[in-house]
Amino acid sequence: MSGNRRPTIKTVAARAGVGRTTVSRVVNGSDLVSDDAREQVLAAIKELNYVPNSVARGLVTNRTNAVALVIPESESRLGSEPFFAALIRGVSGALAESRTQLQLMLVRDQAERDQLTETVAAHRVDGVLLVSVHADDRLPGMLEEMGLPTVLAGRRDAGERLSYVNSDNAGGATAAVRHLLHRGRTRIATITGPLDMDVGRSRLAGWRTAHREAGVAADELLVEEGTSRRRVRAGRCVRYLNARRISTPCSPRPTSWRWGRWPNCGGGGCGCRRMSPSWGTRIPSSPGIRRRR
Amino acid sequence: MSGNRRPTIKTVAARAGVGRTTVSRVVNGSDLVSDDAREQVLAAIKELNYVPNSVARGLVTNRTNAVALVIPESESRLGSEPFFAALIRGVSGALAESRTQLQLMLVRDQAERDQLTETVAAHRVDGVLLVSVHADDRLPGMLEEMGLPTVLAGRRDAGERLSYVNSDNAGGATAAVRHLLHRGRTRIATITGPLDMDVGRSRLAGWRTAHREAGVAADELLVEEGTSRRRVRAGRCVRYLNARRISTPCSPRPTSWRWGRWPNCGGGGCGCRRMSPSWGTRIPSSPGIRRRR
DNA sequence: CTGTTAGCGCATTCAG
DNA sequence: CTGAATGCGCTAACAG
Image 1: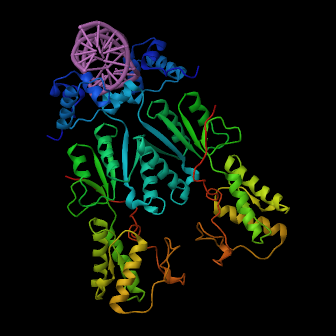
Image 2: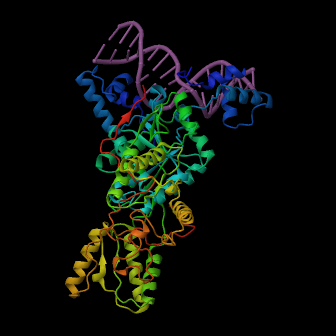
Image 3: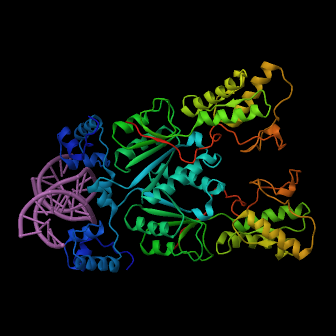
């Protein structure tokens, strides 16, 4: 009883005493069906517990009602970076509203990268959502060429051709630095993240803007690029100390540091906000979507 | 140029000067093909950049090479609980090896729950991986009835019929309590998590075991069930204080408490390990898989 | 309003 | 070893 094949549109048609087309019409909400027929079909569907085979449907409609969310595992550290988890939740929620499936693709290496291309070419998804795309990434170009709807979370550079969703990184960085300057800080470091992405460049620009605004010389020694927070902090500290011969060090072993405060702040109510290369600026409540063309 | 339809098996066959069957054989690695023919086909495939349409293939093979990972959003708080992120990474990695797609389903409410059933019935996935399944959940039963391969992450009760992967919750809890007793603690509370799941019950059992072992009376007042850590701590503290009229309170506002230490430990080298209802015990390096039957 | 006729792209008999 | 024929389950013209 349990190993039986699921009913098809044909089964339903027979049970309802109509043609398969009529069943299809009912299922797809066409109004070219008499109330009587519709009722019969609906009853049969319920009785047989019929659910349309979406694979078969996909073959003819050429749509799968699924989109891929591509996350480069290398930099995500899904689980340690709140950003990606939040992203997944958001995407999942939005997709649910349109009854679209979410294919999650955590891309670790080149092999998985290639597989992604294949997945797309194999008509498995209707669209792709790309995160953390670097400037030299060829994937977006390929997707565009294949004519597959693509959206980037964050753009690569100012002249992005693909559709993208972005937050006001420059503005956020400016606001943050402005805030710190306002509270009397004089040397404000910035960790930009990779500078081949718009996020990094924009935040650096924002950092500079705030300095210029305030008539303060931006100490470029305090600029550090990178993704690994731990390594970055070490690097920045060393460089800075070497150059300035300052003896107030960062806390020596930043083992348990997490999102929250700079180690040296020590919870002393210094007013620090969460600040990190990929989580610093606040995403505006209604992010602007730019469509190309 | 870019809006062209992708090549089909027919295109390739024509280009290679063979029948479609031969192309299919080459693609699927059959050895019933002459070296010559294979070479021709391979060349054509490369030239045309052919990728088999997996939807069409799925229609005939009745397989999609995709599995669903179902996570109840209500309790996951993906992003605040490391467990789910780690799970996703692990699953994704394992799946990649077998070139299987991962459909992530964050289930928020009943509507999405129903949609899940439909997704499954629509032949969209070859199997389902279920997390955080409560005892009264009807979904596993339905899946079993539909004959769809299902695996639970964690079982519901001792007599679980479906395949599952589990960690040694009882053993972990015992070890933890044993450790604390050994360090001279005398009143050890436990937060079990929901008791309609095996995780909760097993850890509670382990907690009792360690007490029994040490000849210490287990103070059942210190047992608290629940999922929300914050609420749980408040509840437990109040109950405990009321009953004992103890005046050493928990730290009043556990706002920024995260994985790591109990608030009162204050980083004082008390030897606390990470402990929480859903993250406490360590998953053994080689988790045992029980197959039903 | 309805059913019949065609495929969608592929894997699979079954004769060559 | 090979190709022609068949059908997976469904939607989309096309005539009734």
